Length: 357
Image (cartoon, rainbow, N blue to C red):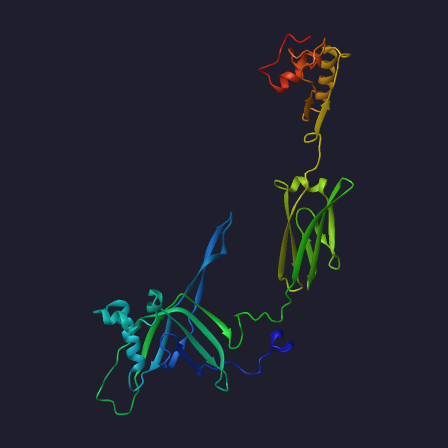
């Protein structure tokens, strides 16, 4: 009982069961003089988890609502009674097109069948205090009118009616949601990124701002960052393995003292880092007569062993019409350049010439 005696929420008055009012959106001009109404009970389905010794209950994933049952006084013009009667007729046994259109206050089929409704609970001053909002109401039963000439005193008709619905919610009149969270602390956070390259070294900068946060965490291995900080930097070489096709994303999560969470995400494109695999090597040779074919073969094999994945291009300058012992237009440049057979085999295995000397 400490909750009531030790907090500001201790009630000074208690809820009365005599103050309530029911209204239906579909019938705004009909007042239901309720004598009694029961706020329906709801039940959560329960699953059972078997163990070695006994079955343990676990929360299920389905909530079941009981019917809404009311008892209301019939007005002298029978407007409220006839309205529910015609609604039931329309849903269950329409005899003509007129029955289909009597309650067609909306163009959509759902609007013709259902109506949202509100049960207002009044405070001690008979002012609306709470609203129980029912979604997709429709009647399923309506009690009969018991006419009896032997009544000695004036007795007013009280009719029972039962409604089905999809769900109901409870909120305080004037509140925007069921749970008032205006007093809870909500965090905010932003995150931006940028890449810069200086002297061949590329770095990624993550810049963030936050309010009302007690913790800030960035994923992708960054971890917790300072609340009063502004950003962190990462070497691109250290994070390139986390990217996909050169693109990397980071998400920062801010948590407030009340446990509320806010996130922000940024995406950056990382520059392509030069490696032994993607570095291009070009050799320009104007003559190699002092080299032997066997010597060039050894040098090429040593090069390829050291850098097996590096691309290599060979450019050979020639002049049309020149002739001589090593510049013979009738002979391919691969002969007088002493291009090693292994290089030719790697370039095009189908055209390597075994007569090179």
